[in-house]
Length: 269
Image 1 (cartoon, rainbow, N blue to C red):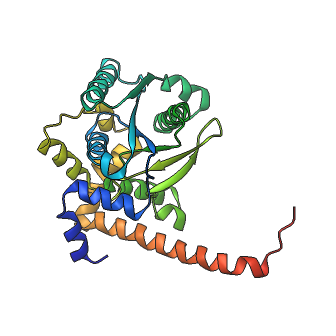
Image 2: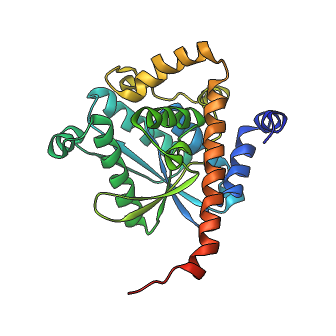
Image 3: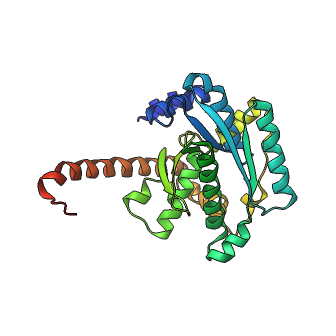
């Protein structure tokens, strides 16, 4: 899309943009029960309230899932209580549980971020299965996308990694089950979710672990990106264009492979 088209989209109300994005990517179906991962921060809170406002239009039902990772003591407990009060205020059922991420990390030899992610998505999968659902919505934004792509570049990646997170993906969680993950805010900037919360008198929780410099993502967010912006003030848009180009190239390659697969490949069982 052109810069003019992108600007016009950004000038639309956020809920309308999210509704359009959901429709463009077929993220939800009518009469679907959608699990919404809510940490209590501005991104997930924004996602929850927008989805709640779109329930009748989309013809969906919502269920909140919040996991206390037991990493920040009283702060984590307060997050859980906050999400519980939000759920009651919106009259949306919620599943709020605790998991010992540090113990899981020690047992599996992972970084804290990887351990937390594995435990969190396993929890989302358990909640979805218990409800007869198969999809969880998470609040990943365009800023998360930019950080993810930069981290992949640093570690070494190809086209698949460069396209970043997708609006819809299927994850295989630790127990082998598959979970559909949808990201309705993937074209929304973090500053926009914060502005939405302010405009709607919402008071999201602040996660102090987002400031811990030992985590790579936090260093990318607070150190690398500000430095890159000194070299290119439009680095954010440049990275997102890179992701879009990689997605276009991959789609073309996959289409060409699909055309040739039948005539040239013999499948044996």
